[in-house]
Image (tube, rainbow, N blue to C red; front, top):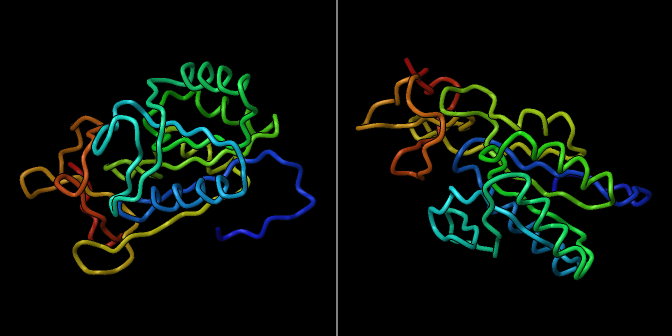
Length: 200
């Protein structure tokens, strides 16, 4: 982690891992949750049900690191499953991957968790393929105690990749394309500021 934790901190905060595609967000997310596991913290991990690129009940990084996760469709499901599991054994850490794919109620729920002495580790894209702020992540950038913004390598020039370019038949996707299209390197590239092509 890039932050130094104040040992006087009361337990309960939000850690946000963000950036463009292929920046290593999921890998960092998994590493962080495993560290909490090694410290005997009881963790529960969620993923949006629509993201089943590699597995229905696991989160995989592009480098094939993985961790078990519960697929959910919305923030209400997260709350219900959390409460059921917390009654059995107190949960210390909640992990949420691809937080931008859930409804906006997830932000308030994560705030509640953190205020109730739960550590929250969230991961998500900071911008969509049009280079606009992605929902949920934009709000968590403001409210999270700890933020790691990761960069990738630009597919075109090898510089710092900070944007996600969606590609359709070898060309940038049109601006009226659906906002969400779950895929990996078959449809997306990391681009720097200068190589990113604004969708039209």
